[in-house]
View 1 (cartoon, rainbow, N blue to C red):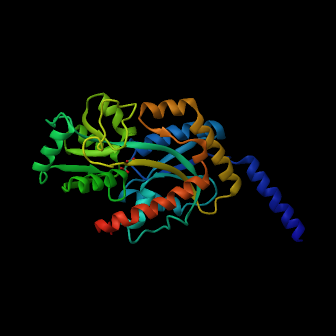
View 2: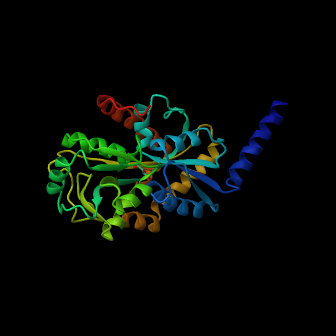
View 3: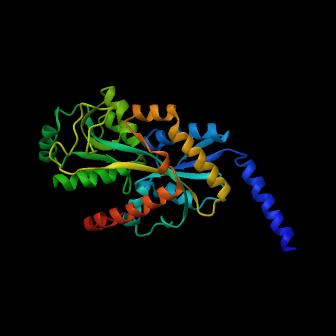
Length: 319
Ligand code: MLT
């Protein structure tokens, strides 16, 4: 009897492995459409679906700094047809939210890292300042009036704001959105004053003159924005923030599915079209060695350990 069951299990698993995926795969994005994470997801999904010969659909579930979408993915069926693409916010949420409905380090299977996305400090185009020094003086003397747009507590734009405000020892009014896609619309429209956001969302707006840019958050300047100085070279010594991104599946997703998704992700990060598109947007695809479950798992753990003390020291909680 056991032999029959073992044979049956082997048959079904190998059949699954052979056939997967047999229907479209949904990628949950914990942010509004049109923003940086949505943009990255659509670019990588297009590449992966070529490899998998199956559609990959994006489902936006923004809000609460991304925790609404991450919760949705954590509770989804672990059958290989629901995935999650999210960023550094996975690592900051455990410290910011005391009542998270998922366990960041135990509720997901890892597929791999995807790309690292620098951030830029931008402001509405009517802002008079033409360089960072003048912007800083203006911001400090108008701190009670200026509004800082972001995607809510736990988002990358929130984290950048937190670090920037600590670095200049000045607080601004935070205006939360379901993502920096809608926040960008209001910044371009002049309804909010400034924001720190990922290049995958800001480069097109900077290049078309819809926003002013004052700095990048990386230690070195970006090839996509060679004339934009770093915060470090403008006096915020050691300022270094890059948004890493990972692909996850609910815990217990069949291994054959994970293996195929890892292979698809690895083919995507090497694809010339993917690399060219990310370069245009100032982002850096990871090397294949990082498009692995082990690499993402290790990174997430080390980032949870890194950001926890930083956030607890600020004593900020979302709930
Ligand atoms: C988005 O796609 O809206 C962003 O990732 C939001 C953020 O985390 O700042």
